[in-house]
Image (cartoon, rainbow, N blue to C red; front, top):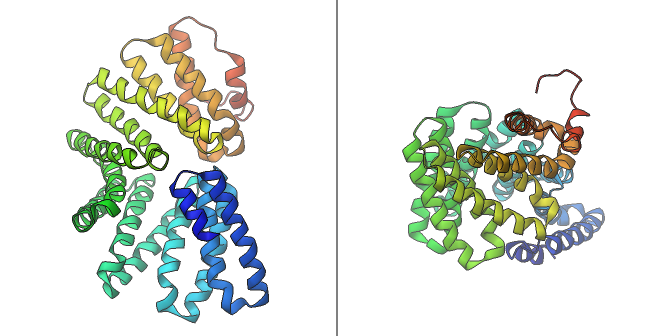
Length: 355
């Protein structure tokens, strides 16, 4: 069931993948009760994979609980055999960092990924060929966590190392490692942009988009979310360089892809659609299509509201920015803001609190 879930996940069959791994965890939990020493490693593997599937379905709290349990089990197993289980601990710490970040636990997320990177550097010294891809993946996540904490130079350094490793790996096996190179190039573009390296950022994201278009031709279901994400970043970089029509075109394509994805899995992709609609509103405002920009902001707020009410810490900053956009555009158009759009947010923020 564990392997079946992986195959279903790769094919974009998210609901089926979650169902399969839930069954695997239930079976292995029962087996571990009967013989803990024999079946604990298999239970830890399944919990790690369960967390991934739950995260893909937007079940953030459950995903965090599952990966915390997996990390705890792997720490126990490492005490029994460091060499056998240290790679598994590093993988679960990497995933724990992602889950913590999604829940707004940024300090904890940084600590977890720093531990994962340290372990994977040790593993690379054991066997470079086997563990180098894992180090690149953790460096990518470390860069994200460092960026969230405002450590911009460190974040750029980490992602540059990840890109260099992934280029080396692509030369060895293009089909296997091209998706990882696209991930790291996408994040490199973000880091370069934060450091004011706008032209370099546009070049990096352009390469990422080109790779992800190639990957979508291989598997539409598996790689379309990544293409949509990179198109949003491409739009940002084009906007920074004053390429407003190109920026709008890229963002319209990204929104179109997210609408398709929401039809497949509303819980997993609706927050991403909300983010892309906010960006679309920004692009429309840049070309003086203010009424359409206001409509995009309103749709973003409507899409986001159920997630904001469930995860206010995770979505507060984004929600405030989108509300500001909506109110400003309403004011410029001399239109009354729609109370039904704003009420979910007003009910969570204190009266008179600055947005």
